[in-house]
Image (cartoon, rainbow, N blue to C red; front, side, top):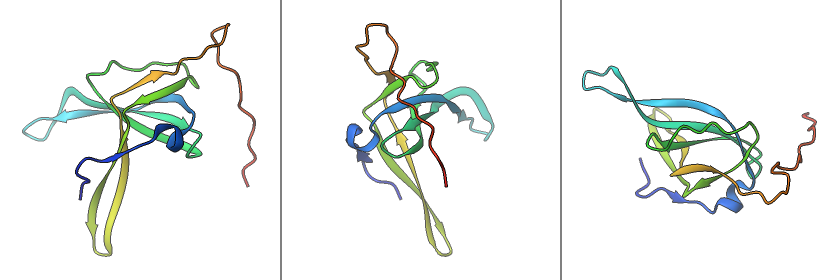
Length: 126
Protein backbone atom coordinates (compact mmCIF):
# COMPACT_ATOMS: atom_id res chain seq x y z
CA UNK A 1 0.00 0.00 0.00
CA UNK A 2 1.24 3.47 -0.85
CA UNK A 3 -0.37 6.83 -0.25
CA UNK A 4 -1.05 8.51 -3.59
CA UNK A 5 0.88 11.70 -2.85
CA UNK A 6 2.31 11.06 0.60
CA UNK A 7 1.46 13.19 3.62
CA UNK A 8 2.34 16.86 3.51
CA UNK A 9 4.00 17.97 6.76
CA UNK A 10 3.92 21.21 8.74
CA UNK A 11 7.67 21.35 9.48
CA UNK A 12 7.57 23.57 12.56
CA UNK A 13 4.80 21.67 14.36
CA UNK A 14 6.03 18.22 13.41
CA UNK A 15 9.80 18.53 13.74
CA UNK A 16 10.60 21.69 15.71
CA UNK A 17 14.38 22.18 15.82
CA UNK A 18 16.41 19.81 13.64
CA UNK A 19 20.13 19.22 14.14
CA UNK A 20 22.42 17.44 11.71
CA UNK A 21 23.98 14.21 12.90
CA UNK A 22 25.44 12.16 10.02
CA UNK A 23 25.01 10.45 6.67
CA UNK A 24 23.23 7.17 7.47
CA UNK A 25 23.35 5.37 4.11
CA UNK A 26 23.44 5.72 0.35
CA UNK A 27 20.87 3.79 -1.68
CA UNK A 28 22.25 2.62 -5.00
CA UNK A 29 20.46 1.83 -8.26
CA UNK A 30 19.97 -1.87 -8.99
CA UNK A 31 21.13 -3.21 -12.39
CA UNK A 32 18.82 -5.30 -14.60
CA UNK A 33 20.60 -8.47 -13.45
CA UNK A 34 19.90 -7.64 -9.80
CA UNK A 35 23.43 -6.52 -8.93
CA UNK A 36 24.07 -3.16 -7.29
CA UNK A 37 25.44 -0.40 -9.53
CA UNK A 38 27.79 2.40 -8.54
CA UNK A 39 25.07 5.00 -9.25
CA UNK A 40 23.56 6.54 -6.11
CA UNK A 41 19.77 6.87 -6.07
CA UNK A 42 19.34 8.73 -2.75
CA UNK A 43 21.09 9.54 0.52
CA UNK A 44 19.56 9.20 3.97
CA UNK A 45 20.70 11.40 6.85
CA UNK A 46 20.19 11.15 10.60
CA UNK A 47 18.74 14.33 12.10
CA UNK A 48 18.10 15.03 15.78
CA UNK A 49 14.45 16.07 16.02
CA UNK A 50 13.31 18.05 19.04
CA UNK A 51 9.62 17.85 18.06
CA UNK A 52 9.65 14.05 17.97
CA UNK A 53 12.13 13.69 20.81
CA UNK A 54 14.33 11.29 18.85
CA UNK A 55 16.55 10.81 15.82
CA UNK A 56 14.76 10.75 12.47
CA UNK A 57 16.01 9.69 9.05
CA UNK A 58 15.39 11.93 6.05
CA UNK A 59 16.16 10.88 2.46
CA UNK A 60 17.09 13.30 -0.32
CA UNK A 61 17.71 12.61 -4.02
CA UNK A 62 21.25 11.87 -5.17
CA UNK A 63 21.05 14.93 -7.45
CA UNK A 64 21.47 17.01 -4.26
CA UNK A 65 25.18 17.34 -3.35
CA UNK A 66 26.47 15.34 -0.37
CA UNK A 67 25.79 17.13 2.93
CA UNK A 68 28.78 17.42 5.24
CA UNK A 69 27.52 19.83 7.90
CA UNK A 70 29.07 20.13 11.34
CA UNK A 71 27.65 17.78 13.98
CA UNK A 72 24.70 19.48 15.73
CA UNK A 73 24.45 22.23 13.08
CA UNK A 74 20.85 23.46 12.97
CA UNK A 75 19.28 22.48 9.64
CA UNK A 76 16.01 22.78 7.79
CA UNK A 77 14.42 20.26 5.43
CA UNK A 78 12.89 21.55 2.20
CA UNK A 79 9.42 20.28 1.24
CA UNK A 80 9.31 17.19 3.49
CA UNK A 81 6.81 14.44 2.79
CA UNK A 82 5.98 11.35 4.84
CA UNK A 83 4.92 8.14 3.16
CA UNK A 84 4.48 4.49 4.02
CA UNK A 85 5.32 1.07 2.68
CA UNK A 86 3.19 -1.83 3.89
CA UNK A 87 4.17 -5.49 3.75
CA UNK A 88 1.49 -8.15 4.12
CA UNK A 89 2.01 -10.63 6.97
CA UNK A 90 -0.02 -13.56 8.30
CA UNK A 91 -1.31 -11.28 11.08
CA UNK A 92 -2.24 -8.35 8.77
CA UNK A 93 0.49 -5.94 7.65
CA UNK A 94 3.69 -4.28 8.83
CA UNK A 95 3.88 -0.59 7.97
CA UNK A 96 7.12 1.38 7.70
CA UNK A 97 7.10 5.17 7.63
CA UNK A 98 9.74 7.21 5.86
CA UNK A 99 10.46 10.90 5.26
CA UNK A 100 11.72 12.31 1.98
CA UNK A 101 12.71 15.90 1.26
CA UNK A 102 13.97 17.90 -1.70
CA UNK A 103 17.01 19.11 0.27
CA UNK A 104 18.56 19.67 3.69
CA UNK A 105 20.03 23.14 4.24
CA UNK A 106 21.65 25.03 7.10
CA UNK A 107 19.14 27.10 9.02
CA UNK A 108 19.91 30.83 8.97
CA UNK A 109 21.18 32.06 12.31
CA UNK A 110 21.50 35.75 13.11
CA UNK A 111 24.22 35.53 15.74
CA UNK A 112 26.99 38.09 15.50
CA UNK A 113 29.74 35.53 16.06
CA UNK A 114 28.31 33.03 13.56
CA UNK A 115 27.83 30.24 16.09
CA UNK A 116 24.63 28.73 17.37
CA UNK A 117 23.88 28.98 21.09
CA UNK A 118 24.47 25.84 23.13
CA UNK A 119 21.07 24.80 24.46
CA UNK A 120 21.99 21.21 25.23
CA UNK A 121 21.56 19.95 28.75
CA UNK A 122 22.17 16.45 30.07
CA UNK A 123 19.01 14.37 30.20
CA UNK A 124 18.37 11.68 32.79
CA UNK A 125 16.97 8.45 31.38
CA UNK A 126 15.01 6.17 33.66
